[in-house]
Length: 388
Image 1 (tube, rainbow, N blue to C red):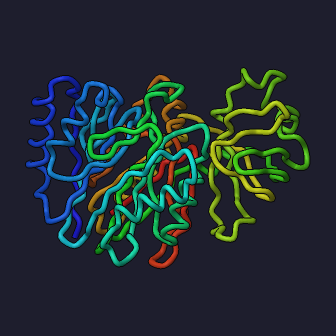
Image 2: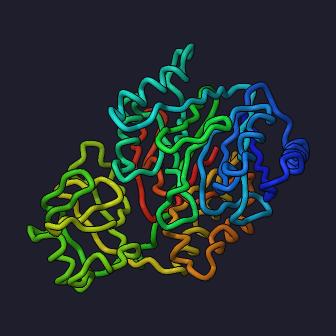
Image 3: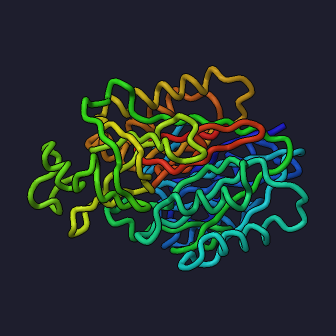
């Protein structure tokens, strides 16, 4: 059995007031069982004032997470906020860890951190929740692929650390009160836990008539679409100007079918275009594979809110929901423009179970998962949901 609860504070300066608020909510909402862990999300200012470290030192369970832009829990949604999602159980076991700086062998560094955290456990975890750093050096797929290699067929869920600036320069991962620019924090869950996953992308009616095939690519670099230089292809369609550095590609989502991947499960993945190289190759915010086929989608406020509400209704209809962790792409917040809290408020006002929600800089979630097989993917533009 698993019990969950979410707690929060807006108090960023007075440590005693913040701790008292959190402890009062904790006592009201949940009785801690033998094993507990907390997923923590916060605005970077909680790190800068020392509040994060103080709170982590004074709560009776491990805390792992990241900075984010804005958050929601039951009954509350806001920006300058710290939230904690508590998972507690007598028959689920938790191990937490943090990697060394991820500036070298990603698989080797991650594997070392995993083995250190999992020491003494005789089986693979049933679920890993990870918070990698957001860097320009690595697409999010490298973290997903590393974990999928280290603990194959274990579902991986999580988010890049972000903040509320355009450059994300204050984004950091969190491990028991310490904060990191280049390390990945994580929670491993063992025992009697049944994770389920939902992914909200853009609706089918957002798809445009434009289609294509990735004919030359390497990692996140797409050199050619339909055997044409990528920049030229998009310019011919009217999606780029002569000076691509001034164009805004945030709202040009690619819905891609990775048909040549051996683990392709028939479910497309959203990709965001970030920029172009001097030779006209496109840099995406995630790996793209040759021979993959895609369609363009539109990204508008109504679609963001419609998909959020649709997924909430799916969660509300599910049996045995103990708690829900939701991580939407930060671009969804940007699309909402003058009403940036609208998606959070939609979740707050409609989701029945205990939950926590915070914006992601790239979403990590299986596109499909059974008791034996998990197809883990890195996403853009999506709302990924973990139900436990």
